[in-house]
Length: 279
Ligand SMILES: [Zn+2]
Image (cartoon, rainbow, N blue to C red; front, side):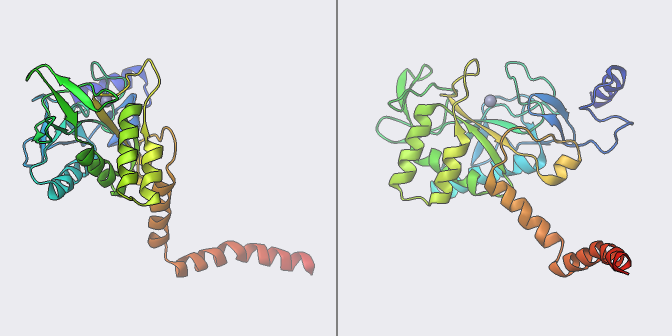
């Protein structure tokens, strides 16, 4: 399949695909809605803390992003024993168009279904994508009963994703009523201003014709600097806390002493030039 992608790429002269002419392209290549994926990792669909809604070949993403989903689902389960995150589609093994989705093409998008309880508050395994109304209730046709979105566990997942430097969450698309419930809950819990600010920014109901996302959380990760050099094209807002993580990484990678030496090297010819000019 990858070979076929390469051949198509060469024939059509596309730029967002790996080819012998662009050997540096790898991983998440292109944009969330236009591109391909190589070196993908498949989500572990059968664990104690995570399951996939369907058994299909749509759970591939960048290794970094997939690991973050697994890690943060596990962190929710550490705090609320028995919690299982149900995951919908991520991407196909080699990315590209995924039927029924506009994005999900480069391993940077994941559909995370909501956590639910019964009306009495008992946790249940999420049976499917269920539309949550502004009262927090959702009709489950399979069990012919209403379920309630579990805002407590849902917030824990949002908080873990937003506190996870490697998840690099740029967006968590979700309906406005669910966002309002999450923010209200977080405020009532006394969460920090920083985490609230992050949540306010990334939780977002997309405008029509995109669906309102009242039945799942659509997580999108931002490219990291290494991924950008390999073909990951940044798209959309740069989150300040992610920019801060990258700035810190650069500062650690280039020790101050080296920076001083670099500056000296840069300035020396100018000083020499000035000295000549003043003669
Ligand atoms: Zn989605």
